[in-house]
Length: 262
Ligand SMILES: NC(=O)c1ccc[n+]([C@@H]2O[C@H](COP(=O)([O-])OP(=O)(O)OC[C@H]3O[C@@H](n4cnc5c(N)ncnc54)[C@H](OP(=O)(O)O)[C@@H]3O)[C@@H](O)[C@H]2O)c1
Image (tube, rainbow, N blue to C red; front, side, top):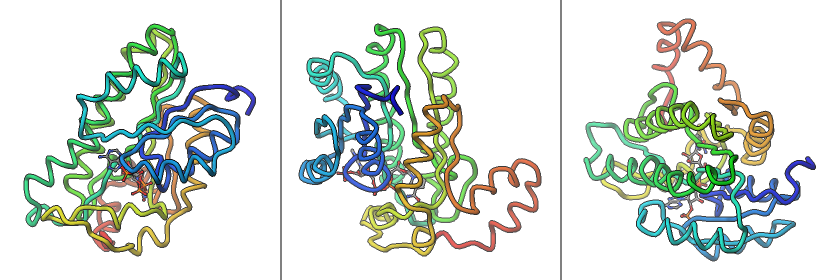
């Protein structure tokens, strides 16, 4: 897509899964890609699979005090930021009754506050350049709750409230906002998910095993962002849950009760 040539696209969570697939796909389309997450070697590995100009910027979503400095580093190098994809995040695999409040806070800290803080650090840049696009990766768990996901689902619902409001406020500055709701995607999200005591879950869940590929999800996201869609839903059969939930809520929860959280 030629209108992506030389666009500056910043992706968090670019060291793995959906973020990795987004980085590779955007770079193939001619975008300059900034890759961020905590693990530098993994970012370098992904950057080596990209085709065009890339820049690896280590960033921890729970260390928001660093963001102003990091945004300045990016601006000094690229002069602008066209698209920020807020993709970095962690999941949960534990019932609410067995989850410490510390874990609830950790999920909100990374998935919600870290994401919002980075967006707030980039917002003045997009306001000054009179244009830009924020993309927030929520989840189908940001549409309805699910087993073993109380804190995760809450963090993904919270993103929806923030970014829908931001879209209304920033339309006047030619700033777009797309919110993405992936279903099950085959990545390391379940291995990296937190158990109730904060330990890593460490297992590949059946739901993820049967999920769509990260490449398919990335391609759906890129197409949706190009079309400036407000909502992008990506997944297998589970994505129909959004419609069924809206039209036939009782029937929806009857089906959902029979599903497993892993
Ligand atoms: N896979 C699914 O089924 C699914 C479904 C719905 C939504 N999602 C969402 O999609 C996004 C990407 O997840 P994924 O499926 O690709 O999982 P993944 O393979 O586990 O990737 C998660 C990414 O987030 C980064 N990350 C985690 N904690 C971070 C922190 N504190 N600071 C900065 N980066 C951090 C990780 O990098 P480092 O470890 O290097 O920091 C990694 O690059 C997440 O927001 C997830 O909630 C996934």
